Length: 282
Image 1 (tube, helix red, strand yellow):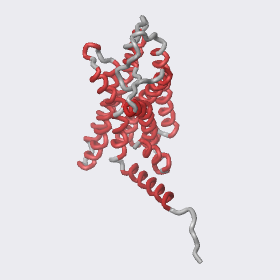
Image 2 (image 1 turned 60 degrees about the vertical axis):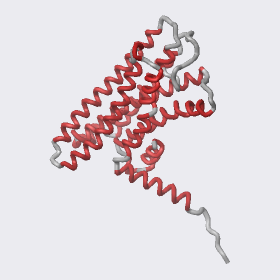
Image 3 (image 1 turned 90 degrees about the vertical axis):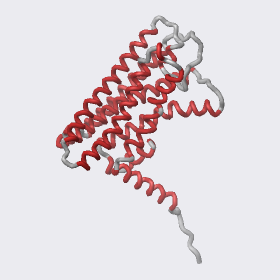
Image 4 (image 1 turned 45 degrees about the vertical axis):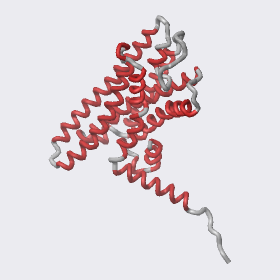
């Protein structure tokens, strides 16, 4: 699904708009999240193994944090894009020009890279002396910290708390922009227009809330209520479910994107089924 969105937006010139530009970036982060965690978990399940090398764990943690952090910032930027398109349509071209969109996307990716680098370097600088068994299907910061016995353990806890605060800030911005959009939508005189706007905004808000709230709770989960099943459920909710749902949420209700996908599929079908040469008979 994410691959189709990337291909449709990249190949469809009529989709080269700010909204689809951010959607392409979101699809890249979703694809990265899935490819970082799920293939290894599937391999372990199929081959009945539970091991991962230390360097593999470092790489998995870095890329997962990179994509998941960039996604949280991109979701906020996409909500701002919807807010401007609904509440300030006359200023849309000024506030979200090509340069501004490129800067916002670059800031999201750069923030994700710095967050991942800080967490990975800080986490694996701690000595791990409480065994080598992670209670998770991928390398996750809280699970690695459970193996640490260093006095600098709380340094990483404070870093996690800071990142959770950033995620909470993104969530509050999304709620603020959503409230402003709903107020604007309620002033639309047409009932059909209100229904269309609500059906577009509410699924986005639901997925954004699920993603950011589970990220915050997973990082600030109190040990008193922590359990292996709860930790696994939270990890699946923010690492697998949103990347799988986003292609459905952002594409099924968008006629332009569905049109771009149809054109892409038609073009691929024509290229695959058209013979490269013809035989001439006597």
